[in-house]
Length: 108
Image (cartoon, rainbow, N blue to C red; front, side, top):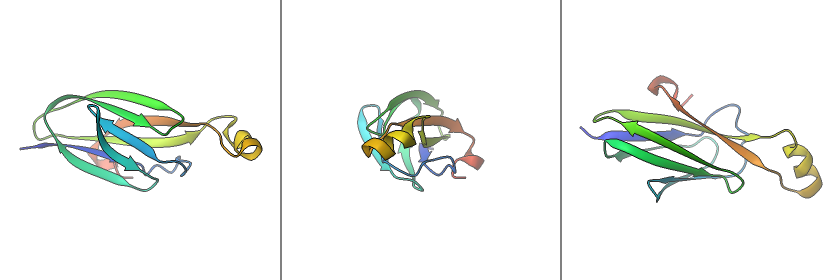
């Protein structure tokens, strides 16, 4: 039975701006905008995810067993000065939160 990786960008706390580029073990995996979820088969074992919203990068190492689905929630969030910088400069930093979540909450 194959293992799977599911990454959702569906959190109510997401600022709903900027795309998140995701690489799995150095290979392009997906580009998520707010509201999207992607699922793909992966080999069992330890893997490295790299998340990049062009302001911030986040690395997450995870292990998935044979037949298991690894579920992650990625959230693009604003910092304390983000909206001030957006108003003054037209752009501001967005930060990433990545959490491994149980299957029942992965897409909520």
